[in-house]
Length: 331
Image (cartoon, rainbow, N blue to C red; front, side, top):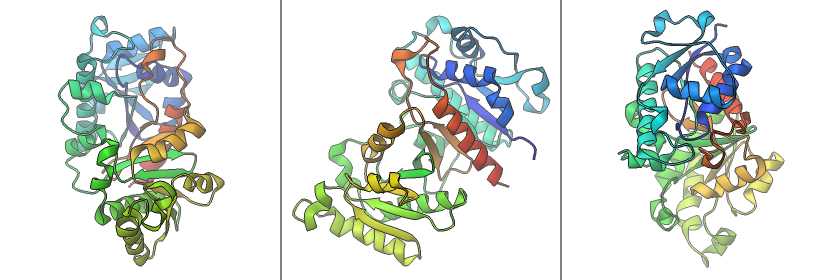
């Protein structure tokens, strides 16, 4: 089977993304798995290569139909990140603007049929918001750029376990007000459909509660009784293998034991703490429900280690494997 043409975004110029991309490029991992197109400022790629004291043939392209991977990796040069203006390890609106432009370029290339999907290096939401991003996060930005009318959301993976969250980048004080039956059911559907896309015929989906001890039958909150439970019942009515709600402090014990294929959580840290505690440098994030396969490493920009050449490529390579698997499954 012919290798897919996939976009590889460098990530925030002040973070570890460029050196991670440089490492997987030099190691041969990228070209082994796909025909990569590096998206970002070519000077930042060169800076990433310099950080790891390596070289790799690369060429700026403006027409991918003329790309020749035998002569070097093609770079879709955004030309907007002068290394002299990038302060390594520091958040800035300048780098945030570069983050946004990478997403614009990648989504445009997807829509034009030039790439089959993309993997992006760690971006910085705060920097992008400083640069003018109005969306909650890059997930919403991507959906808007792709004009995606369908339900979408972040899916995190560690090994074969998926987690989907009902709410994401909002204050913890606002979580309860944002929970409702349709949103929970949509998250269950996203977990179900994505699991099936990965070859799980009948996904076993667990749904977490919100309150301590699952609300203690209404004595410590009623969300489990009034909202989460009815959403689970609706999902079961569709014939799906969905159970819960489970107390949030035990559901992942069972999940890591292999009892479930996916866990639906009510807010960001319910799932993220569990996954990162077990495999911080291994996790993958999928931009689920989008019309193209899109993944990233589950860790952030790691500003404290940027520019030192010490960043692990494990999660990024896992994200590449997931991306390739998703791209190959699509016609």
